[in-house]
Image: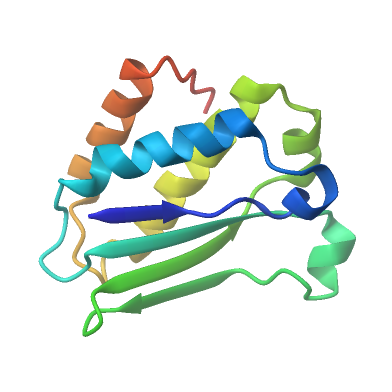
Length: 136
């Protein structure tokens, strides 16, 4: 499965890209490349939204959830708490990104017929193997 995790929407424009988070997502992409969790969904694109409440209220960063079985992809944009992300250290940020990924995949598991239990298990193994401390 191809797992594409974009840089956090809004946050990246304000604070730039964190090299450690970018590297984690690239490594994750490689890790999941040869794995299969669905007969239908082969590509999952995730956009973490890290924006203050006032930006969200204006509709400038909108959550989305699309699952296109015929095209073989799912696309999800999901919010992460802005203040917690901004105030968190790099380990906290990594943990929040991983949680966002898990929650995103879980949100389309039914329509995409995704084996979420297997995906979650592999994600936790990836985190363990790469010393990513999860705090959720």
